Image (tube, rainbow, N blue to C red; front, side, top):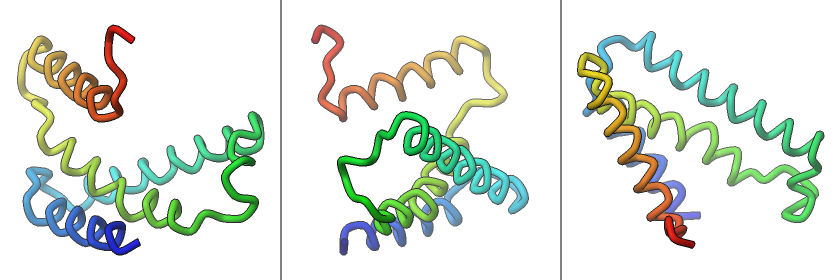
Length: 112
């Protein structure tokens, strides 16, 4: 729990101080879209597929904190690094590198 609170503070400070997104309006739009997409995904998984029944029967408050306060600043940092004014090839390489890092960090190899 301490690591979650440290992560929340760290990601929010970095996201709002060291980004290249010019206006607060865009930051709020990214934040709102991230939370809305997460809520829609959670509702579909919970009620349509009964996907969360094996964790807890109630509300996972740590998950709520992570989804509403931790993930949106990460998306702000990620979008501030995205090469919007570059060629299609550079954009594809950026997305592919994120995809590769995600699977590497999750421990899922490409040959598995």
